[in-house]
Each structure stands twice: as C-alpha cells, then as structure tokens.
Length: 317
Image (cartoon, rainbow, N blue to C red):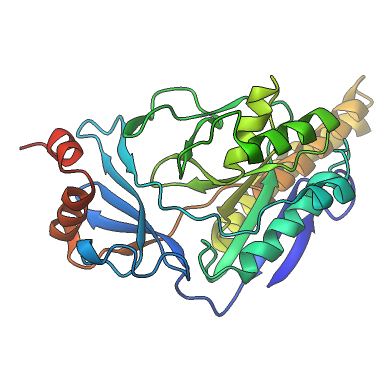
C-alpha cells in the first residue's frame, strides 16, 4: 500500500491509499438486480456463521431500493465485526487531543489505514482510496430503528449514518470508558464508509465512540473512507485547470490594465483553484459491487432466512 498525504504542505485534508494485489475484499457490496443489495463480510470471525442460510460468509446488511427511487429499505443483521482493532485508552492518550492544522486527524488516518490494510475482513480492494477529514462540528446521528429506511430526499451530509451493528447503551462499560475520553478531549475519530449504492455513509468503526460522544452532549470528529478512481480525479483536475486558466488569463489582463482590485481577484482565483484541487483529491468515488451468485432468487432466500416478515413487507407482490 502506498500512502500520500494531501496537501503535502499546509493543513492536512486527506490520505490517499493506492492498494494493489487485493482483488476481493472481505467486506463487500453484492448486487442481485432489481435494486437488491447485500453487504457481506468474510473473515475469521464470520465464515460459517450462517450455514442454515447456505452462506459461506456473514451477511451484514440487506437493502432494497424503493420502487420510486426515493430511498432504500434496509435490514441490519448485527453480525458485523469492525475490521480494525479497538482503540485502547493508552493509544488515545498517546495520540493526544485534536489540532486545528489537521495533524491529529492525519495520525488517526494513518492508524486506520494500517489496520484496514492488515484486515482480512475490511473493504479495501485494488485501486485508489481516500480517508478524508469531514468538517469540524459536523452533526451526525445514527439511523434509528432496524429495519429502517434511508431517505434520499432527506438532508444528510453526512447527517444520518447507518450503523452496521446494534448500538450499545450509554451505560455500557466500554461506552463509559470512551465517555471519559470525550471529557478529556482525546476521543478518537469515528470512521465512516461512503457506499455510493446507498447514497450514504455506513459506520465502519466507532459505534461505541459515537454513543459516548452523544451521551456527553458533543459530536465526534469524523473521518470518511471512500474509493477515489484515478480516472475520475484526472478528468476533474483537467476541468478545474481549464476553468482556472480561462479565469486567471482574464484577471491578469485586468491587472496589466491597472484595474482596481484586479490583483486581489487574481489571488482569490488562485486560492479557489487550490481548494478545488484539494477537494478533488479528497472526493468520494463510486463503490465497487460484486454480483450475488443466484441473483434476485438468492437475495430473496437470504432475506427470508433472516427476516421473512420484513421481506414480505418491502417486496412488492
């Protein structure tokens, strides 16, 4: 795995990961056709869990796009296992409190990258990925209920995120330990995973940290994992560069003509161009999905195995 911080100078924004020799991830999206999705996880703790359903790996999530394409009905199985090790108190203390320059987020991004690279049950596969810093103070709440609905017309940026397992009580022992870290200002970020097929974020690591932050009346710091296809980034960079050159040429002619304020406008154009390039580097790509063997019939069998009542409710006769 090759890592690149972005930007190289200035306030840290994202960590780009170039992954090779990993064709099939342990945690992956499966598609069955007709709007049916399945998220499964294969690793030492998942294989063979669901022999009764005829499955080799653990099913984490079942989802069905609504007929009007206004959202997704989902069912969580609560069999998800976080692909990175737990964040122990000693690690949180040694990493220390957050910083405005992004250095603290960068340290945690590298820690998550190391854990994900070593995990057999994580989502990384061949290609380019990015772990990016989401805006400070971003309000994020877990989707209520299971089963539930991801409403694509609701405002979520990231807003409501989809937990991949049942959330613990604020009085749970592990959550209490994290609540102390919240009060001490050393709570590690929550790691989200952008899944384009759901048009939303799933909670990849930090379920208990999210509960702890909310129990203490605060919002956790957020990092987001997503694919970042090089071809799309190259096209977006070319588009941004063409716009910049056209605008910058006009501004320079105004400067040469002695137009008041033109020099300040050139500086603003340069700053905007730099910001666009940073946003492209940290942008979300399309999540790769693999066909579900057996297609819609197999999806129906798995759904009926887990929750026949939910299947009968969401599938139109």
